[in-house]
Length: 124
Image 1 (cartoon, rainbow, N blue to C red):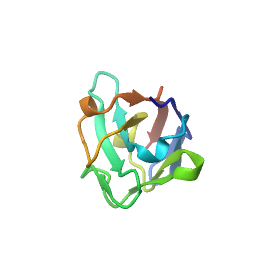
Image 2 (cartoon, rainbow, N blue to C red):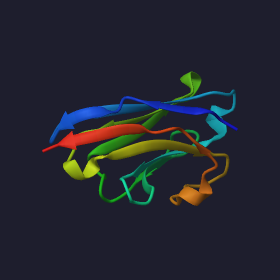
Image 3 (cartoon, rainbow, N blue to C red):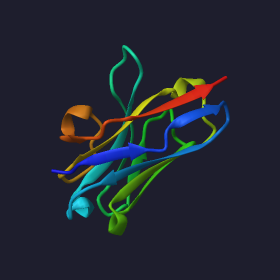
């Protein structure tokens, strides 16, 4: 199991940028598939991006492709989400998630390690 802690959220205006971080405990971080999800009040927790344990491949929700970039630094047990050209509809609580399995997974039920979330608010 991993303990995950997100940081980097905040308030920005439309078109602005934020970089989220997810710090993981444990010595097996490099074995975990990592992902970002987001959730609005009253909404479901939705997939944003995922990255393989090696960092060699990533995938994104259509709504963020071309604007968000997921990356990881395995020696530092940290994952990142660079968010550019932010829009008000990106406003949500962003969660990092991890699971120790092969392949890319997009549904929240496939992940068994979660952080506490960080709020991102994009003002018009």
